[in-house]
Amino acid sequence: MGEIASWLPSLLTGLGVTVELTVFSMVFGLVVGLVLATIRLEPRNRWLYIPATIYIEVIRGTPLILQLFFAYFALPAAGIRLDPFIAGVLALGINYSAYLSEVFRSSIKAVPHGQWEAASSIGMPWVLVMWRIILPQAGRIALPATGNYFIALFKDSALASTISVTELLFSGQILAAASFNYFGIYAVVAVFYLAVSYPSSLGLRALERRLELSRRKARPKRVAA
Image (tube, rainbow, N blue to C red; front, side, top):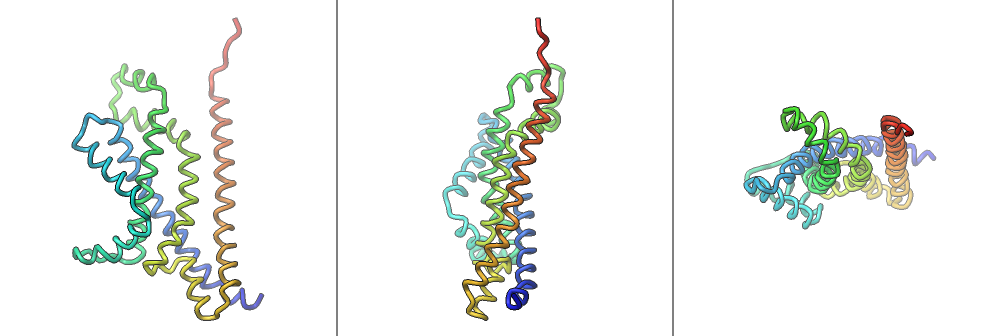
């Protein structure tokens, strides 16, 4: 136990970096993914639709670790030098934005078309329709998949250790290299990951149930004839 206690300060610091990396990358991915989704709702605007589609296919068709290496090792050749943490946020956010964009696009398209028509009939601007009517409904539809991606991103953030981001796994690697207690340290690291990802999964399920319950309560009741 004394040995584990000596590891905790370094591992807790690494866990904090992992959480920060996950949150910043997810926010970046959500914003870019939503922009891509709205662009790809209108195929007739080919000047935006085609580049957005190419972006998504390239990102989804290449490994995340390659994107991390490109952001940290390849960009300096173009005169762009990024801090390891910033490079990690950029690569992880870009990678997940490509997947989230498809989640958002399918969720927006799942909203009944009558909602669009009703809003348009009263002269509501497109942006206002999206913000006040479509996105709240699409958000409920997209929540399960988005939550799963958030948990996956938390675990995938370990790949940032390959570009020297001192997150949880990299902190464990440093301790293991110094003490040679690989089994004990990596077991504690695994517990740390599980201690965050499992409660997050439970919280996500509880939120889904609550939203579903509120949706059912808000549904108008049928009046018997």
